Amino acid sequence: MDPLDQIAEARIHEALERGELRGLPGEGKPLRLDDDSAIPEEWRAAYRILKNAGFLPPELQLRKELRQAEQLLHQLPESERSRAHARLELLQLRLAISRRQPINLLLEDRYRQRLLERLDPVAPHESQTL
Image (cartoon, rainbow, N blue to C red):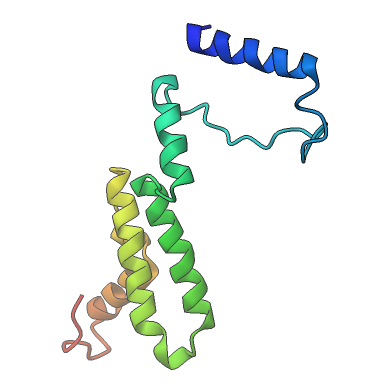
């Protein structure tokens, strides 16, 4: 334990002995701590400060925007969904790129459907583009 932690622990124990920490809200209840085990110990204080100030790491910010876009998409009337769907796809692409994961466009439903339509020799789809 580093010296700063030792000093803090000593002060807490002294305050407990004097009874200064009795009757506080939440007394006797477990603390609700965030799991920061994936964050290196030397960065945890900085992450907590940024989190408390409302800042998120880029990937978490993208995930938050994705959730908001998904909720918006479900609330919009069918006639107004195309632009929101395009935004959702853009956010999904940004998240995949930030993770450095390969993007398989054939797994994306809209892209696959449009590709199949263009490859279908029976249906005239020359005016459509990918």
